[in-house]
Image 1 (cartoon, rainbow, N blue to C red):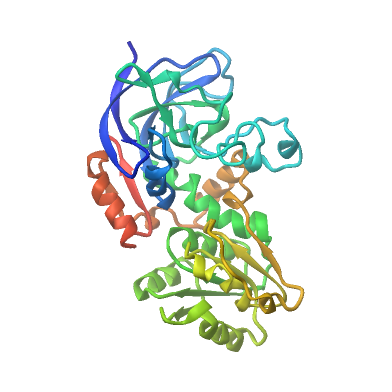
Image 2: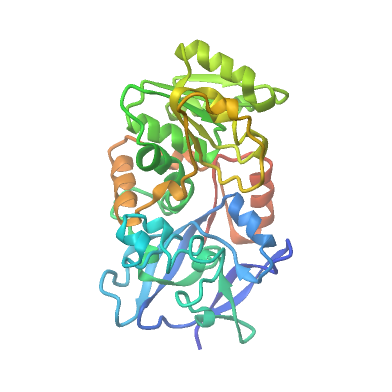
Length: 371
């Protein structure tokens, strides 16, 4: 008999319920983790409609309970952050430093959301005697989860709370990494951030860590712009919802920067704004699509003139065993804020409210906290 615990389970058709599951002992290459907190983002809401039954959640932190006999890097009692972009370490992409694009283990790059064949065996988690998949192979909206070793990074901080640790593993990493790892923002440069929700705030923090000289935050929500200032923005522009492609805002950016920004980051997840960062940057500048727009969009090729670069990084080119400890050190040294990003916490039984607040844009970051 395994551990009986609560989990949030979707039917894949837009619905979910909080019910009881059974989590078994870890196999030789698995680790059993007791979740303490799980961050929420739009991907979790999207997962409700992926067409498969699974445990929701892909951001989390907790404590190791038990390890399989082949696990060497963790022992019971270790505080850990869960990482959804697992890697094998030996495929083509891993050998080229792209652990987030692992061709064997990544649930995104290796075959789509949810369960990746050959990597995460769902049989260890069951409901009513039937195996149950875990979102991104980790399913963090559950009191317990079974994961592979590469899904874990130790939390070595003495002061970082479990809720704040949980948000590192997607929202923080995506924003920070898009600046530091993907765009490689240079000291003294000018940066524009379109959309200042959870990811956008971490782009701002990444630009601050990179010592950008000017950080311009753009949003339609004045409350979010106030928060952007607190997280490091040096200028804020209140956008007009009727400003198509944010071209009027782009003109304001050119006035502030003389010729356009060096870098512009799109963090709105609005398909119609997919090309907007191109209008913000100077000739030979860089536009970065951070929010994961996947819809088909039309781009005026004049926006690329001249010599502009447009990139679409995944997960901030995350190298979890390197980047997570760096982010924790930045937090411990007072260089980035994490606790302040959490607007509200919820119990797992309040998940309906948490999703409602997420979709309503009321939180910088909402977190489910387990007893």
